[in-house]
Length: 125
Image 1 (spheres, helix red, strand yellow):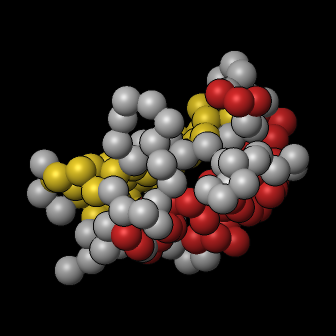
Image 2 (cartoon, one colour):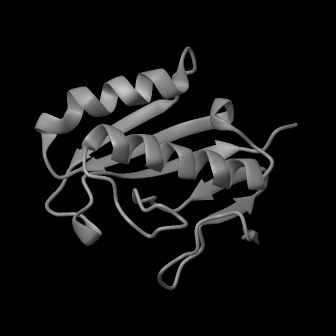
C-alpha cells in the first residue's frame, strides 16, 4: 500500500490520505468542491461539479492515471433535485467513458458543499 501525495494535489484537511494505491488500484477520498488556491466553494452545483471533477483529475494525474481509468464513482448530493445538473456536467466530463456509478442523496455536506465525489481507478499501464 502506498500513499500518494504531491504538492500539486489538494491537501487533506483531516486525518486521511487523498489517494492510496494498492496493487495498481487507486482509491481516492471523497472530494469536495474547494478551490485549491482560494479555498472557496463555487456557488452553483454546475460550478461545484466541474471543480470536484477537476480536483479528481489532478489527483489521478499525480498518481499516473486519468479519468478514462476510473472504475467506479460515488456521488453524494444533499438534494436529489440537483441530479440533472450534476449528470449534465458529469456526462460532458466523461464523454464516452462510463464508469460504474452510485448517487447517494445525503443530508448536509461539509462546509455547505452541494456535492462530494469519491472514485476508484486503476493506474495506467
